Image (cartoon, rainbow, N blue to C red):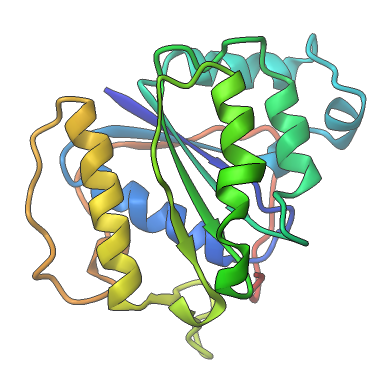
Length: 214
């Protein structure tokens, strides 16, 4: 069983959407589900802009999608829509590439007014790619994620947000037929610590993360 996490953030800095993906990944690994992670930053810009579906990076993306049982897409919302880089990444996939996959969208934005972007900006694309179940998704506002001044790469997710993430990832795991464990009683942030299970990153281009990003 494998879940692919796709990050749509165009920033090299730690981001709120990345924090959502980190939390979700830790929760699914707690039940011994393997995860892979791929970022829009891993795809060369020329491949994205020119929709180079025959490139090596595009092939790596397609292979990761094929071997996954579910996809989690974590993205910031800019100007009421997903970043163009994420849409360009999805354009590298063939028609019906998500056929039979369960898809969970995660998004972050400056205010709650942007949460509808999941419905009218991201979900139509995922449905067009053949996603079997595109789940309701989770949206995080700016105040839902707090950054530690001394360790900016280790954010704190507020309890209300982690509760929504727990429910969404539990539904995803249930649809995949994976037995669940109840971890809601653990302190906030515990899911971001080391947990059992394998996690694989798909390195195509090195990245340097410092400070914070929306």
